[in-house]
Length: 524
Image (tube, rainbow, N blue to C red; front, top):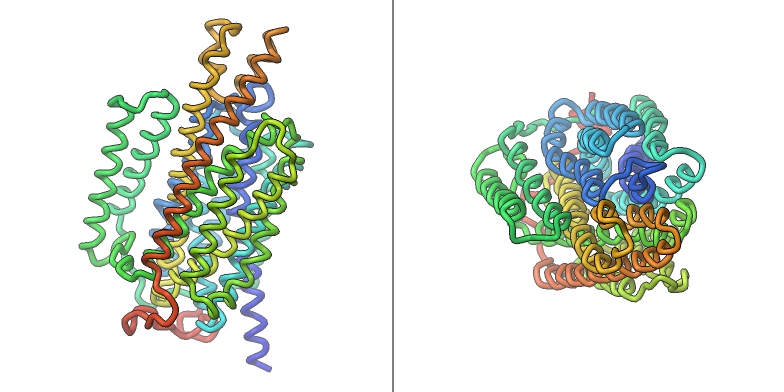
């Protein structure tokens, strides 16, 4: 009876972790559907393309930079306690975001949300890793990863529903009751656990990682925003960011308690799995960034309708993610992850065939194929990382997977968003002859700004609207081609470096399982 109760308790705890996870993941996909509204001068904040990119990346950069630190803090002070702190901070900063009055205020509030998200995410996977035995862990992580897929698709639907009835800030306000419920369930149901030998906080490493990423992303976004890459204002930050990140990696390899233990990447299971996660999300994030504008600005769908169109993305992940454990046992992680990346590449090719009047079923098919590919990638890649990291350092393992994902999202939005911005501006500029000189710069900031300018042009407005739609579709095609190349590169890297079936486990002690948190001495 006691064993049965303990088994049931594990799955209840998993459910609570999923609720905590959904609150964080939901936010990013909700924001994607709201970008068009936020960019509008009348009903939103009139945010430019670069400001929209920073609204996303201020969150992801802080999130990625602090994941390892908060993973270590959770291992030290208690994962349950850290999870509650993170959920509270996330909820409060979501409340501030919902009432932002300017794009800059939204960017800073989103950065504060990144603090809360960074405290939440590593604890969820770390607690799951400690609660479940190694033989059960792949199934639990598969369910956890499926929840990510569901949240990715539910976010646009929830966001569209809110935007159809309320103001743009409601997409952030929804996080407040979610986090409140999550905190209550954590306090009632989740046991405390901590590492017997927690690491130390690497303050210099944390600052260097954030500084390097901010400089790199700033340079990339600035290049796309200004339309010129060969300037000191663009090349300087990019070069500085690369130099700081290189120094960060060198420093981290030489200290006892690094923020990011780069020595773990010597194991090909972890390095290849992290690369697969990064390249998959790099491609996915860019596609998510421009499809919101495509469905709403080019095709004219309402936010709710646009959100409903993403249901096949979740359906695809739900179809494949729960089956990956069995597929990995039969075929090996290399075959499953490589196949997933190739499927994602095929879906991205589909974006290059979208036009201003393509039948909507074609977009739905793209989302379904993309979801199936992502469902094949995430569970085995995540499990490959967690299998390498010692069980009492689950926070570090969780942080590796989530840092890979968040850095990829930041780079994907910056790089692909810059491609879209520059290609859109170049294609649209010859069609601005009817636009007053004072409004031409504003008209090229984003397709939403162009449409706002066109609304005041009288008989010349429809021609500008048609030109804007054509220019955006062209820019989307260029970004999609880049995404295809990234996904194919990921498949090739996985095929080359991820260990196949029959590869012996890592050195003894590398992934030695500890006693389950439910019964171990680490519980309070």
